[in-house]
Length: 318
Image (cartoon, rainbow, N blue to C red; front, side):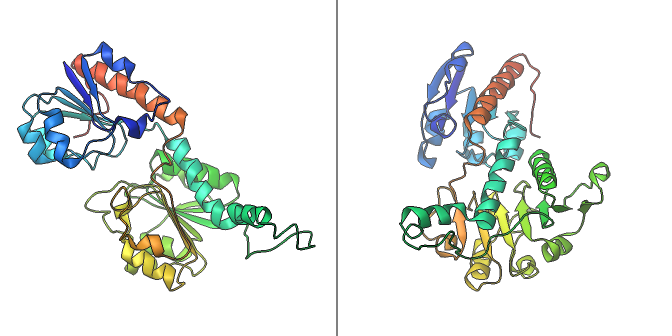
């Protein structure tokens, strides 16, 4: 059995180990793989592990030995699932390994806007506070999360963790989801339509998968409903938001801010309009990446491989 990891450093920059893979075959590990290198690196491979490297229909149809694609992620939009199914290739993902980490990071972005910790840290270290003669310095308003309304798009495991944290802050919660889960409804959590959510939320946080129904779902037609002092957070997939429309709204002051851990093309291109948008924080798709989450991911990955080899694949995407 031949195994290849196409972008090993994405999950393991050196603080973890892929040694467990040696138990299941001959292993090749690449830190990164360019699009031009994909086919050559999997042409005679049985099992492929990938985090961000896309595997297209063209590659799938040419890779005659390929039997199993083990995603090192929950999202699976980088794989042509239809082509994989047609060619009897099993695709498995890693579910629910980073829910707490992403929920935590979501609130880190929210609190950057609400508490402005990094701004005040700079004020202190620049000497401004020390020379001011003032007990404290104000640099724009800060806000409480208590009694604010957070609108959550999607309601999978990450979104549910976000809602739990929101409850602990005393927030009201609106949810837009394809599936209404009545058991979660309460006096502070309601399932609503998209328009209502955008009109009534102080904070909007995106936690849905990228597919044909969600591509550019958040665009000027929805953004126009947002409150002028609201913020939007995206830790899901960049293309769910129309970046030109969001950039325009930020630059015109239509909304207060945006926190993006994901963008439409990654790594980010220097032409991305969000790079020059006002009040936009961008991080390099790392909400999922605490060492505990990545360790958990590799353990689930090993179980996916074991079950595939035994003929009983788990976490299969169809």
